[in-house]
Length: 316
Image 1 (tube, rainbow, N blue to C red):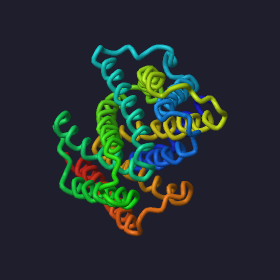
Image 2: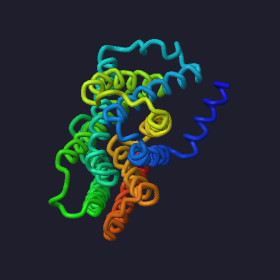
Image 3: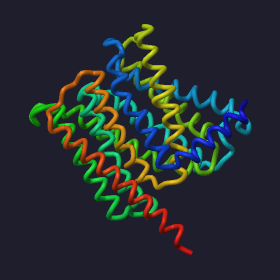
Image 4: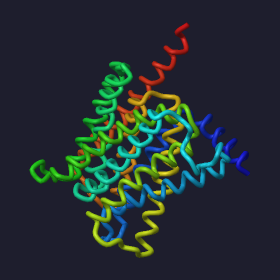
């Protein structure tokens, strides 16, 4: 069975390609805000984010064992101190991302919070990639990213009304989430290119859970253990986090970090659609213009990645 599962995963990854894998992951992420909307009111956003990390870590441990990863998931890979430090850094970034994202979404609303967190991520990633990897994204990438981010801002403003009513504290948390997500992607790319995706993510999300849970206990108050709350947490941890980050990590092996983060702009598209159809939010009509800009920017980013891939193939 592990062999069949591994072969199936490889087949799916081959069919979708790196861009398709990241887009599918982004669509799953787009369900997180809506899922949190159905969490019991007494369940703190800090508990949601922390338990989500714990469930994702358990998902990756079981997946690693099921795939028969070398030496299982019971111990970290035998690597240098630099690699262990990278795993800890990824765990820290993921912990900060989840705590700030869920708290920010609860303060801003599904559409605004998701648009700010994911909309700012590509900008952070572009500058981080240039600074760390000395790989500056091309002009077409920046054009698509700026159009997409601009569209996300329009969607956000349309979902909240007048600018004076914007929840600035929640917005700051969402921007912090975007920065943490970009830093995670940059550090995680090297890890997943050199080791088993499931085992690497088991350690990353395990670290994130250990770092997040004390803050949840301190800031989140008593844990709501209702059946409805656990159902939301399990969905967020296993599907919208575990499976989604499995797809994202596999996709990062074949594209640049900046492009991988930019493609996550498919998340606010999904979140926007769900906020209308499921949550019942009613943004202004011109939110559709922002949505069109996000889609156009996403298309340009994909074109930029394909152009870069062709140039790499043509280069002797």
